[in-house]
Image (cartoon, rainbow, N blue to C red; front, side, top):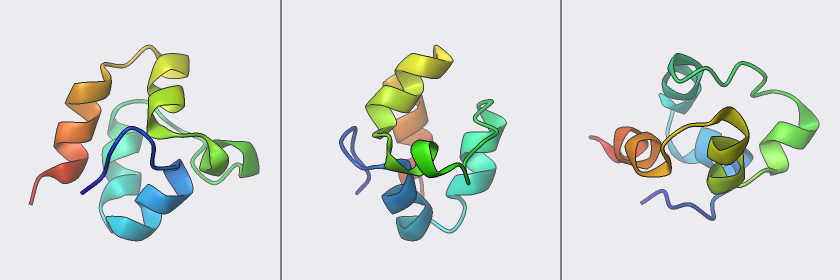
Length: 61
């Protein structure tokens, strides 16, 4: 289960659909070295996104 402390890099490995999901929320630079080291919480804060909404979408089956 993906949580707020997972890095973007970890999330991309855990969920094969994560890149499309995160891009859909406006996170466009998922391959950037600094972006992959950010936690989901940090990335949502930077992009002005609701953490719970993004987490729920990433954890949908």
